[in-house]
Length: 114
Length: 118
Image 1 (tube, each protein chain N blue to C red):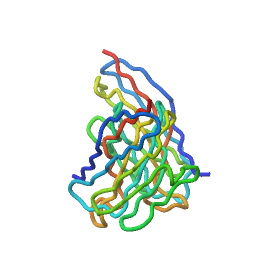
Image 2 (image 1 turned 90 degrees about the vertical axis):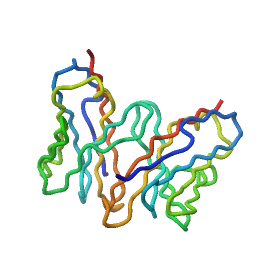
Image 3 (image 1 turned 30 degrees about the vertical axis):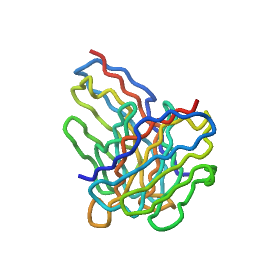
Image 4 (image 1 turned 180 degrees about the horizontal axis):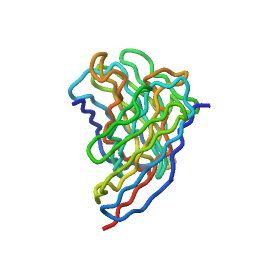
């Protein structure tokens, strides 16, 4: 069964600290993996996208890694800011439905405190 | 970049009425749009795939007669929740895929519509 699992479910950190979010997937065949940020009451916004051959991708203070062998990805947030408080969703494309269908992770709710 | 809008952003209606939500791709044509539903603290759940000029494809468990989808043009898809009930209260999000050659297969999400059924 194609699944995407994320951990932790929720996380609270102090402003300025770093954190790492995890994503494990069982989607096959694999096309690509994306990390999205979703503010409360808003639609998801893309942070990074990685294909099978990419190990790491950065977008400002966000750095995503991908290990296609172990089917794991992580999103590292450096020097967190209050505005980083949001849900972070790992999304994998692929599976029997084709490359354009998204399989969503359960999300990690991050709260950054002053 | 590719921008997707939704209207309205919030709607409150009485039980038994119908509500229409619009999804527009503002700066690109989208032959395929998706409709999602998201409950509090849960991830997005795909409801249906909307293809311009043809019938929508619904996911298992989604009532097509209750959630009417019309993709009448390359920039507009509408979702109508018919005879809404309180359990239909949710956050509805659409996404659109640009044509080949521009972020191919990338879904761009709208800002969402909060539906509350009293």
